[in-house]
Image 1 (spheres, rainbow, N blue to C red):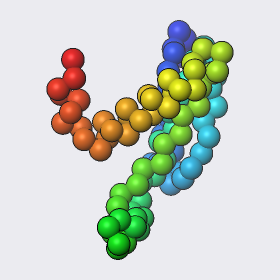
Image 2: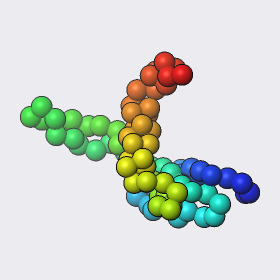
Image 3: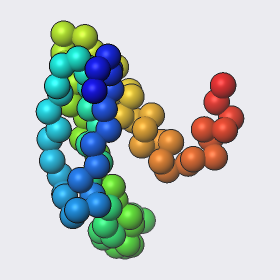
Image 4: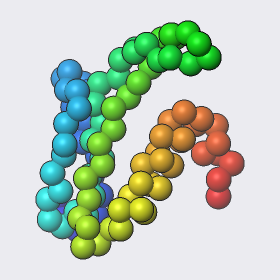
Amino acid sequence: MQGGCFTISNLGGIGGTYFTPIVHTPEVAILGVSRGSFEPIYKDGEFTPRMMLPLSLSYDHRVIDGADAARFIRWVVEALEQPFLLTLEG
C-alpha cells in the first residue's frame, strides 16, 4: 500500500481481543477493531448486559495531537452507538 494516511485493522473476525496496532509508514494512524462481546455493565443500581466493542487507536505524535486523537475516537464511538446521526452530518 502506498500513499495511505489511515488504516483500519480488524482482528475480531479471528477472535482477537484488545490489541495495539502498529503504525507503518506512510500511515499516520491505525484503528484496531477487536471482537465484540456482551459484558455486564452496572447502571441504575443493577447489572445489565451490553455489547462492548474494544477499539484501539495508535497514531504518530509527530503528526497528530493526543487531544485530537481522543476527540476522533470519541466521534467513532458515538457514530457506532447512534449510526442514524451520521446521515444528519454534512
